[in-house]
Amino acid sequence: MAEVSFYILPSESLRDRYLFACKLIEKAYRSGSFCYVLTDSDQQSQIIDDLLWTFRAGSFIPHQLYTGESADIAAIEKVVLIGSLSAPPNWQKTVFNLSSHYPDPGAQTERILEILDNSETTKEAGRSRYRRYQQSGMTVTTHNMARTN
Image: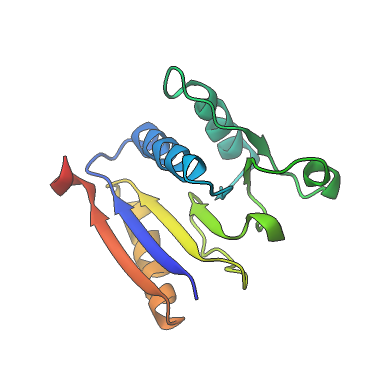
């Protein structure tokens, strides 16, 4: 069963949320996890895609937008995928949920990371997912980033 980690940021800035996500994605990639970044839309996916190229000088994280076509993933491996569809099987191990929805944890899912900014809209949707994770029997931890800065 997947473990879920919530990261609650002190800022209400969407950009801060995305930059923090990029840092965690980089950390996961460097540790050997080829994760899936779940978004709400193609536009949000494109924002994350662009930021992964520019968020930190000298950083290189191989990544690709995922549109659901098997040709997208057939020829690649060892990359971070970004998309608004459910994660393909080989990328279900670690899921970064930047969407406002409950992700579909597959049997292979070991870890789900939720990154919330401090806006009431984001926090309310996060609370709903938190309860659902708990009801599903998943272990949930929360990291208040305001306390660690």
